[in-house]
Amino acid sequence: MEQKFKQHIESILNFTSNPKIMVAVSGGVDSVVLAHLLSKCGYAFDMAHVNYKLRGADSDLDESLVKETARALGVRLHTVTRAIPQDASGIQEKARNLRYAWFEELVSEYQYDAVFTAHHADDQLETLFMRLSRGSGVEGLGGIRVKNGFLIRPLLPFFKEELVTYAQSYKLNWREDSSNDSSKYLRNAIRHNVMPSFLGVSPQTAANTLTSVEHLQEAFDAISAQVNTIKKAWENAPDGIKIPLISIEDLYPKRFWLHQLFSTYSFDAVEVEKLLDAHAGKKCSSATHELLRERDHLVLSSQSSRKDVSEEVYVVPENGIEFPLKLEFSTPNAATKTTVNCVLVDVSKLTFPLILRRWNKGDLFYPTGMKGKKKISKFFKDEKMSASAKKNQWLLCDEKNVIWVIGKRLDRRYLADDLSNTLQIKIV
Image (cartoon, rainbow, N blue to C red; front, side, top):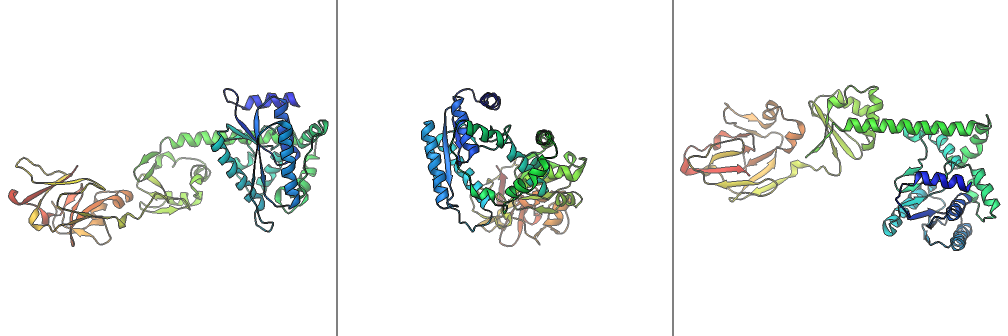
């Protein structure tokens, strides 16, 4: 077993030399064997143990055994107590979250290259059935990965029976967790009630099922590669990620690919599919993000990064403003020309300070080059502005009126007709 283990671990470690390894050791046979195998194969490592105080004195005895194991192997041991009430809901999930959060702290503090955990082939099979029972997709049915970030599972090729045989041959000491006998946890229920019958179908059942898991992992890797290819057409924009509809409209089966593309952002594929059939300006929201439908693209933005821009109001004094955009006020000369970014206004009609703000429902103005008045919303529509562009459009106003739809059109009531009484306002 040692030779097989060493060959396997060398195939999965991609560090140049002398990796800094930490091993998670609970005191059970799996993790004790993992630490012993690493020591026998000449690897340097530290150990880490979490005491959840869930089983009273037994939890403390687990910690004592881990300390003895660390002393026997001559390695450094990190220990921490993260007490979880026995009547808490989702105990296993809470324990896992606490454990991995602490591992991240240790990796950061001690600069470990990897954290080894003792997941084995039986765990892989049980995980497959757990996720089948929960309706998991391809990724979930791919089970436990040998490598996932800083986590490495070097015992996945080995079955529990092999680990116990190894431990007995070296007379290793380990602790049995009495909670493993309880079927109130889904994993234990599958272990005790499902796996014996399933594995008894034939001698090849376990190995063949693990091969199927590997195929599912490869399938998910292929899907992920295609997702990355699709996302190459997505562009970062000031208001979020711009997703051209052409990059997703011909995907088949559509709902499958929409799930792969948008589940990361907590969207339901059905809602995204409905949005694709909606008119411009419609949007849908998830717990973390918003998707906005434009004419020829979607805009994906983070809930945490978005703010109510309608509440952004800035006072503009006579010397101009630097932020959120730079407006320069100056006296023009005879050669000054009006452009979309430079307007000439009658200074006598201005009452300072002016206001820089976003548009509000009901705003209207008298656009230059047109007769009569027009609602800002109708002007935006005529300009074929996207919903995000409308939301981010700045208006220069006084107390009552819109003076300039900045970069677009001036209100003709403020047009200057006498150069001596003219103010130049320019976007810099």
